[in-house]
Image (spheres, each protein chain N blue to C red):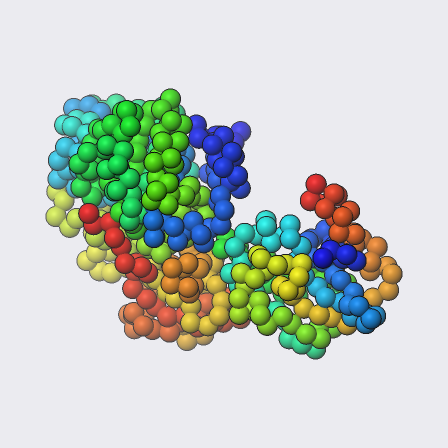
Length: 128
Length: 365
């Protein structure tokens, strides 16, 4: 499931969509949702809106607190995951699979990928 | 230096997520806040609240002294009875909220918030001058374990606790061979007990409660669910909903301020004037109508004017909606049912003033 996944130090992942260069799925890592605990609210941006790298684009709230979610790379939102708005708890169950956050189209160049880590390196370096 | 309760290692063994709270390393959740919350409402939950403070007030002037420091009328307490009250300053502001138990004549137990032990003891001492009273902080000698939920009484029966004290009462007892104090109180809105036990028996008691409680579906409950439970029950949290700038009247706690108490107490003049003439700000309960969660510190609006702020807010796991407590300017036309707004991330979301508590209390046993 984590094949090809790149993760940010702020616990978002991107996954390039198969056969569709420049299109990515963005989600939260399993470590992130475990740390947040029960997720009870998700706010996602409008389709068509654009965000720069590291810009806050969504809000995820657990019972305890609201957390901003940041873009791992720049891009334009092409699709949002309506099912997690309806059922935020799905994020706790399947963050790396069905409970992705948004899909984006990106023309980010290599420089934006420099600080992203392979999932396994992320697990080792960031999660520890 | 972060402190640990006697049960600290039990929590770690149970897989709890630990956080620093009021200077203590405490479990915030074991499995899931929502699951733990529901289990207390439906079955039974076990809480380590040993971080709370226990103070013994003893001496010939104990009653006179207590009557001077809280608005409640302590003279009305009979042996074993308890009362919820506030420790007020000269201006009626709340230094802490507490439960005072009468043990016997001239001897009282006071349970105080962990975060306020030092301020409380300091204030007690300042006020004790000229009184024949001894104030002993016993917090380091005792552990406090809460057993809460509709099946709590059944568990106590099974463990041989005998007849339980009535609501807001305490007595000495013995559970599975362990001597302790049984208090019919809690912070969840459910029926249940709080067990005050010498530190050296706390681990044994905790294990026995978990073991015997299995058939009733017992779960250990962290501070996360403790907070959502008390919010549903609209019980104040010191530091959020109560502070030294807020009086019991403003906090909606006038029911705990007798109008006919003869004794003078700190802040009485301010408090009595507010009861007679009204207040500038007041506590309200609200539920979100629009999709959004009101949280501590968020602003409250009415007719496009900022009129106050949220002091506690979050999800109600039982109702499935979002609820909050807020202080607002005392505008008479705002009453139960009025639509107001909460500012969340720079946008206004509709909310409705609602009566407190948000769920039916079941602890009148």
